[in-house]
Image (tube, rainbow, N blue to C red; front, side, top):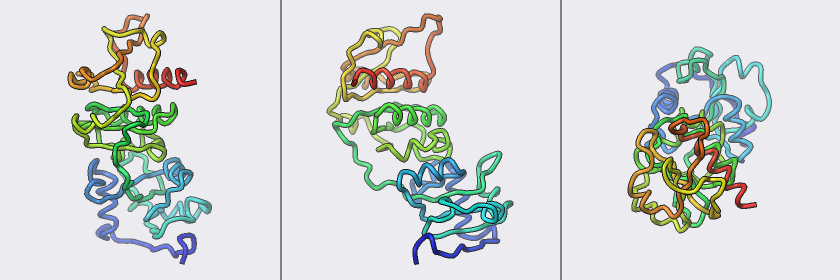
Length: 260
C-alpha cells in the first residue's frame, strides 16, 4: 500500500510509546541523536521538507487539522497518526502548538566534504543564531555547515524552527573536533573587529569556509591561526560588534557577490 493510501491510526492514550517518543523528540534538544530521527512541526517546515523531496516516516495530525485539511501535507508518510488537539499540544514544545508534525530520518551522509564552500560554527551556542546562519548559508550558496563541539545541536527543535527549512538544502556535519576540520581544503576566512581588510575591499576566495565564532569569545585561537584571510566589517555607527548571525549574513552575501 502506498503512503498516500495508508489508513490513519487514531491514538488516544498519552502513554502510547510513539507519543512518548514524539514528546522527547519535540522537547529534548539532543534526543534526535539517539533516535536517529527528528521532529518538525507546522505547515511551513513540513511543506519545506516535502519541497526538498523528503518523506516523513510518521506524520502526526490533530483531529481538527485532519477534519479540515486535505492536500500534500496529508498525503504522505508511511504512517499517519491522528491525536486529539489536547494530545498534540502535549507533544509540542511551542507556546502556540501547530496542528501537524513530521518525524524524519536523520541524513546518513554526514562526512565532511573537503572542497565545498562551507560555514564553520565555532561554539555558536544560541539556537536562534545557528538557525539564522543556516538560512544565510542556504541563501548565499554555502552548501556545507560544519559545527564544532560546543555548538548548539543542529537538528534540535529550536534550531530547526529558526532555520525555517534551510536544513533540508544543506550538508550538515556536527560534533566535529578541530582536528577533523583540518580535512577542509578550501581557505578559511575569519571576521575580526581589529584586523584584516574591510570586507568590501577584500578579494574573497571562492570557494572558501567562513568561520563564525562563539557569541562572547569569538573565534578560537586555533582557527584564527589557520585562517588565510581576515575580513573586517566596517561599523560607522560606532557599535563595538555585531551579532554573529548578522555578521554571517553580511559575510556570506559578500562572498556570493565576489563569485559572480
